[in-house]
Length: 284
Image (tube, rainbow, N blue to C red; front, side, top):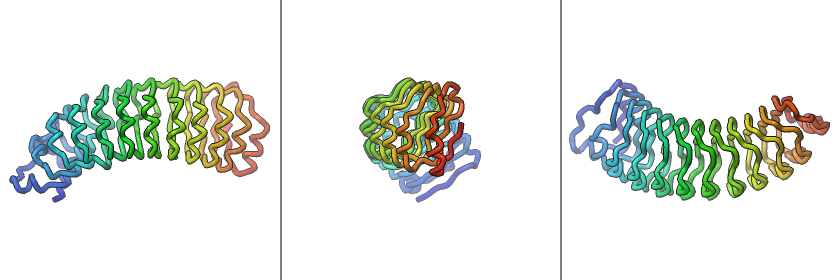
C-alpha cells in the first residue's frame, strides 16, 4: 500500500487501523509540520520507502530498527543531531539514504553495515570526520558530503570502487587520500572550496573521470600525470595559487572546458592555443 500525505501541514498521522499499518509499504510525509517521527511508523514492519524530509524532526529514535524491510529513507531537511547505532540493523537499505540539511556532528560506525546502499547524502551538516567503516559501503554509486567541516577523509573511502560521483564541496580538507586513484569508476569529483594544497598523483588512474572541480583551493602545482585523464570534459582550477601548468594537460583529448581564472601568478603557457584550436574553451 502506498500512502501520500505530502504537504498537508500534519503534526501527527491520521488514524490507521492495524491492517492498514501492517500493509503500508510506501509512506510519503514530505513537507509537513512533524516535530517527531510518529510512533505508528515503527509498527509499519512492511514499509520499504519512507520520506520524512522537510519537517522539524529533531530525533531519530532507536525504534528505527523495527523497520527491517526499509530500502529507502529520506530524512533530509530536518533538525536531527544524532543517528542511533541501530541504523546498522537496516541491512535491506539498498537505494537512497538521505540525511542532508540536518545538524549531525558524527556518523555512527554501524553505518558500515548497510552494504547495499547506493546513494548516500550527508551534505549540509556539522560533520568533522567520517568513520572508517564507511569504506564497507561497496555498492555506493554516489556520495554527497558537501558543506560540512571535514578536514580529511578516511583511507577506507578508497575502497568504494563502485563510486561514480563524489561530492565534497565546501569543507576544510587540506589533502586527499593517496589511494584515491583506486576509485576507478569515478565520473565526477567535486572538491571546490576546500584547502587542498596538492592533488595525489594516483588520481590519474581515475580514467573515467568526466568532471573535476578543484576551484577555490590552495593548489600551487598539478602532477604531470593528470594528462592521463583522457576522458575528462571539464577541469575547473579557478581561484587557486597555481604558478604553472604541466604541458601534459594537452594529452586530455576530450577536454572542452578549462577554467584558469583568478590564479594571479599563473604563467600562461603558449600551448593553451593548441587546446583552444581543438575546441576547448579556456577561461583566463
